[in-house]
Length: 224
Image 1 (cartoon, rainbow, N blue to C red):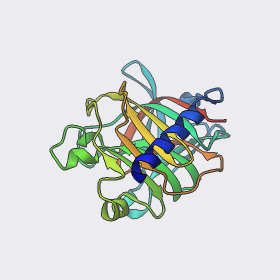
Image 2: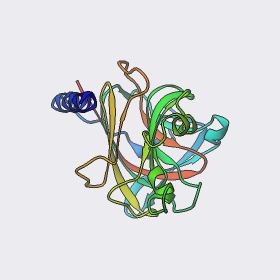
Image 3: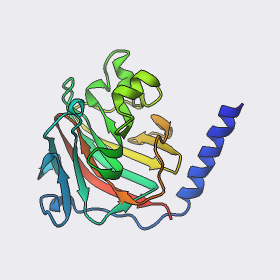
């Protein structure tokens, strides 16, 4: 009963905050190579047209196993709670596609992120249940969460997108909770508690680990 009450309370909190939103920010992805407009960390970035979308191709220079991931952060865009929306395209190549968004970014090793493993979208069990992931670096990496709380911070994606195609992600962030929706789903693929304190507006942007990804139509809407 306590769990049900907590879930309802968190849901009500989210609905309350969704009702009071600021005007959405839509960072100019075409300016990703302009150092005055974007900060690129441990990655290389370029713009390209991909399937009719103006997109950013972000390539990681390191690997989370070694404590390094790639970030692309629009300058002067700060975020605390609200909604992050983005179109993403990865690859159906095992261990070669990890892409999503980072928020609450204090530095290159201190942030929260939601990312996808497209090669697991249609994989067999148990890999399919590792298609979308929430992390909170530096303590709560995917390795640590899988060990300490298996199945709580990574889930399958429903409905299942094309692993090689574009898909839309909507990440709702409140003070206590993160909810991830994919494409036109009415129900979230993943709902988690936040593992760090929010309350401060910090940078938000693109996340890539180990390989590369394509990103388009980033929109960030903050709760007031």
